[in-house]
Image 1 (cartoon, protein in one colour):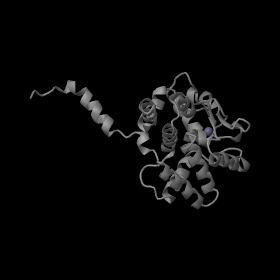
Image 2 (cartoon, helix red, strand yellow; image 1 turned 45 degrees about the vertical axis):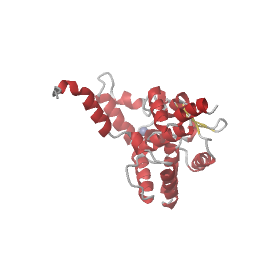
Image 3 (cartoon, protein in one colour; image 1 turned 45 degrees about the horizontal axis):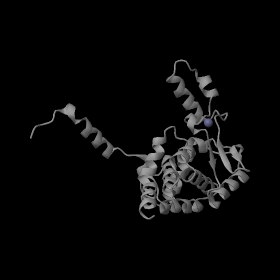
Image 4 (cartoon, helix red, strand yellow; image 1 turned 90 degrees about the vertical axis):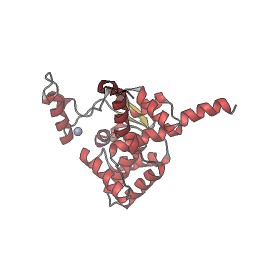
Length: 234
Ligand SMILES: [Zn+2]
């Protein structure tokens, strides 16, 4: 058999990489793991447990990013329409925003650190400016209400968001990788399994690319199964 020269192995190389690269959707929590994580929050001392529960619910069900959670203000809540509005801008000069501003300025000659900091905080992309309904379940709705009764905004740093997730995961004795971004992937996967269509899923998650929503929907299999059953069971 002829030996293929290395240059022809591009496909094989990409295939190998696809099989070995770890993707966030692989770290998605199933419903049982997510329930255990929430249960563990109640075992943590106050206010850590209260904050951990908020982080886990808005991350794992509403898909907020860690940066969005750390900068969350109750002024983002529209109580009448039961929506959270992720704004274009929220004035901030926390340690995380200062670090991000320095990084942005370092990668852009036109941008000074003070100018970069003036634009902080802002969400990751323009597509991240979005409206998120929080009355998807009574559990989430009550969690938002309890949070707003107690705080004007998330009272801790960006690093604390990670720490709260870690504390809950340890308390729940959940092995594997649990971090804020896998909670966000858990939210995406949860809604895809429920049968949310690509465009609303993209809007909820604030993805720039519809393909990301389509990927979660394809992996869930729900839309495929529903479409095929509609055809075959009629
Ligand atoms: Zn900040």
